[in-house]
Length: 282
Image 1 (cartoon, rainbow, N blue to C red):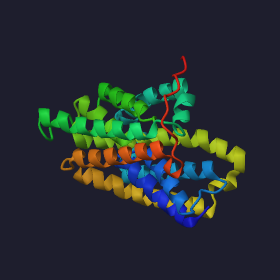
Image 2: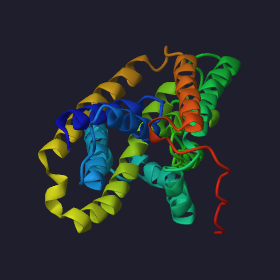
Image 3: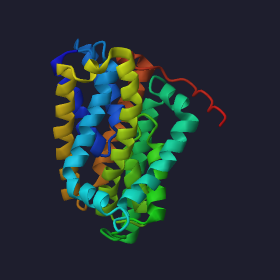
Image 4: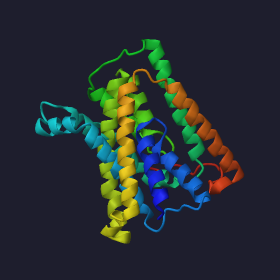
């Protein structure tokens, strides 16, 4: 695996995980574009992507370390741990019921469409906030908000649909202000990433051994993901109340249109557009 490939993919993962632009979608696009330049992920692909996500988990742990310590020391008084557990349930249910079908979308027709879905979500955030007043909304996450944000996190399992953008929309729709929704959204990523690490990390170890998680280029990707993820969280928390999501929406819409064009033309090996496979019965 090339060190340049690892560093670029780490940057893409860290930034796109916490900016509302979709990490899964950008990783797919970045890998295909880097492939055109001759950079390839190598033979330890599963382990590499597992450790990229671990880098963003490190970023969440560093930014919110005081919150994590407090909720672990006072699990009854501090209800955040319970709320994070509740918020994780909808995505877990979706994964159990539709996991194989969703995994198939990562190599199928859905990528360009899902970027456009993310763009629509970001536009709706602006519409909702404009209607109720900038900065308005609750400053404390309660059970209903956690469930709504968790449901939107389930939607974000689709490749190219932003997890942070989706959960932010869920928070705003449930009555939270942007800053509160953003903080809880970022903290929600920790259980999701940890669960993915345990599941996919097991697969990586079975395929390539423990050493595959600790290769030099894999660790380069992890470091770049952790640093860029840390900076992305800090940026969003500092500017979240002044950021226009229309700008992110325009960017993601452009990416979605370009991906659709690539799918129609077969550019860079993007999967062609086709009718979706039917959803399997529960």
